Image (tube, rainbow, N blue to C red; front, side):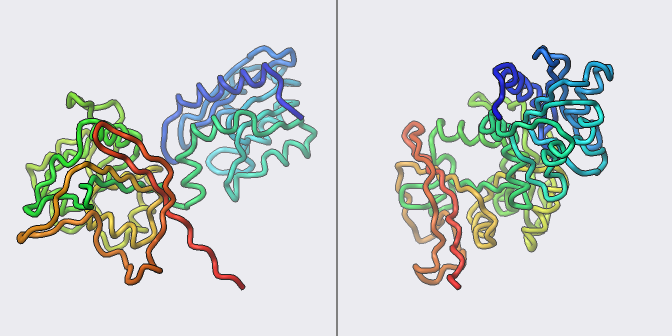
Length: 348
């Protein structure tokens, strides 16, 4: 069974209205109700935890006689569980919807199989319509469902010989303006930006997402500080548009669990070698951004500052392998985007 042209057009509209919903603990979902003749009757989207899901929001705008025999086009499989709201699959059945077209299967253990419930009730179901586009809309939420924690990106900027600072500790600026603009763009896409107290005390970062001119971007990540030392009263971090949160670094999985409960889906770590190494050592990194500048820093009598520190590798065979996803030229710099290669399970 395939989708009709008007249903594909309705799915595009569903994806557009999904963006009206807030990013956070729940996915951004949109829905469009079509008449039996294929005309748009109503649209809806999910406005956050505890509110009507997209399908129910759209149905609420129609009279009962309008929904009987209609088609629901939804960007995510209608849910099949009772939480703070009832199951959307049953709401569609009760409304007399005769056909449901959706884009992405619900990956939840408790909320999935709405399509099965619809089919059992005699509703025609078409899945996978504009699935790739729909996954882009909720990719952060899908990652959280898969991982059981927020998606973690670790970023650092380094010299060609793998240093993040000169021997005296100075590090601004290793990379050029194109790389810095790219970092700020990526900060704005994250829900939280994480730095260690060492970096906060040494560099006094603002941890904001800014334009090349220095203006704040509309979307700002929540600043998070890892470590025991107190953030100084005059630190730039205290002027961030959002109040910072501070955690001990002794339980990184616990920190991520707390952030997930707060609705954080994407974490951007750029807090220096110590923090980056801790996340890597704990196996909590999903993506690594390495900005490489054509400069040599070497080491000196006053110190050496490698990009990362000890990560538990004593021999080459124990070194974690990375899959290089992309290489991009940014002015004179190079951005390497890589992801950890899963360790294969031993043969039985």
